[in-house]
Length: 107
Image 1: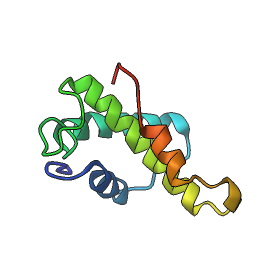
Image 2 (image 1 turned 180 degrees about the vertical axis):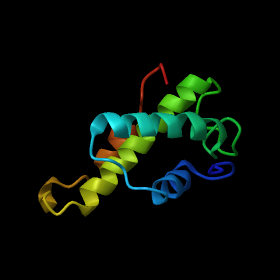
Image 3 (image 1 turned 180 degrees about the horizontal axis):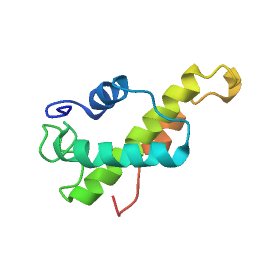
């Protein structure tokens, strides 16, 4: 059991992923991130129970927001450290912000 209370989503994701290595299969990564997001979306600093209160009070919507942001952070990290991606194709700050600025009314 990893306690995510009073932790930012980013710190929680770092703690979670430090415990094991993500598998290469996309479907397995999706399931792992769904479980993580359901847990962290209720208690992290960005949740309505945390100090930042950025996520919806609806647990499903909060989990969806945590999932999307977590997945985006993993993609950013992969992009940053993958030597196969040319420097001119690497994600810029503006790209990351644009990708995470508005998840839609449902979230």
